[in-house]
Image 1 (cartoon, one colour):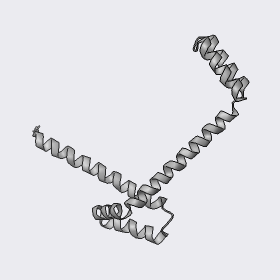
Image 2 (tube, rainbow, N blue to C red; image 1 turned 120 degrees about the vertical axis):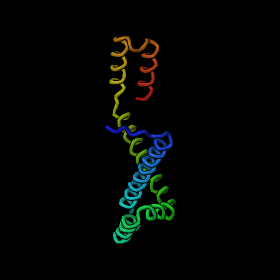
Image 3 (tube, helix red, strand yellow; image 1 turned 135 degrees about the horizontal axis):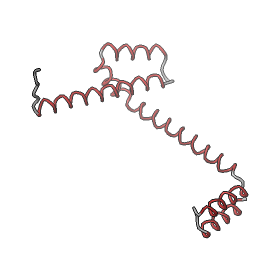
Length: 132
């Protein structure tokens, strides 16, 4: 059995190369995800970008990031805002469904189990009655 001895620089270089490949694949997936999410270009333009990225991978990803960086940021921001709005509307919907008597009953169960104190129960009860 032949033991391979690696120097510190060889290990460091190998880790750096693996890290660079992982980042490149992440960028490639990001570019493809942005391409398929876009609604402002035609299918032919998307196909041309995909062919360009496949034929010249490093150059294609770099050029796409340079040309479309502002659009990518705007699309990501728009998607994040939509997700936040959906979450906010869901929270409001769930909070509105809660009946004050249900809130007081749940608080009473928590009080009986010792999870909350009498002062906390009184506070929850006051808020529930005030919201009704």
